Image (tube, rainbow, N blue to C red):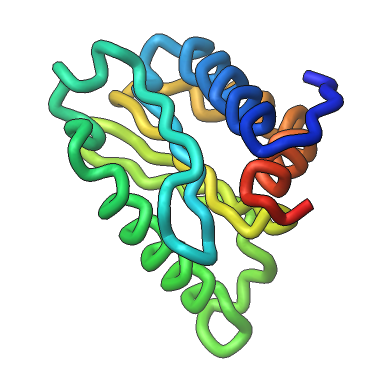
Amino acid sequence: MSSKVSNVAEARKKLEETLKLIVESDENLLGAMIVDNEEGLPLVFVPKSEAFEIDVGPSGEEEEALGGTILDSFNQFQKLISPDRLNLGKLSRVLLEGDKGIAIIYPMEKANAVLLLYGKRGVKVGFIYTILSEIMEEMETLSKIALGAI
């Protein structure tokens, strides 16, 4: 996934392509979103086309509100694992499981953003974690460019 991207538009396009590849890598993943920690707004949102017909994930109208909710939730998780609460160390990821589906919230510290992946039950979580561990550094760099931080 190596790239020489220098402007915001190129970085966003490359992020969209990368997230689409991740979402397409598992038949049960339905979408991905990167949320800017400063504004709580989605930087990139990549749903599968069939995701809107399934009763899991956003319906397509509320991405901005979802971005704010993700940011608020992420901040609460940060407080929960802090030394004065659970003392778990640095937050590496959060896995939410419901009876209909799952969500993975993955911090992108260098980019000051949060990655959300969501899908139906049956997502191969270990496989997704492996993919993310291999490409997260470049995704963070692209996100920083897309956010105008570089």
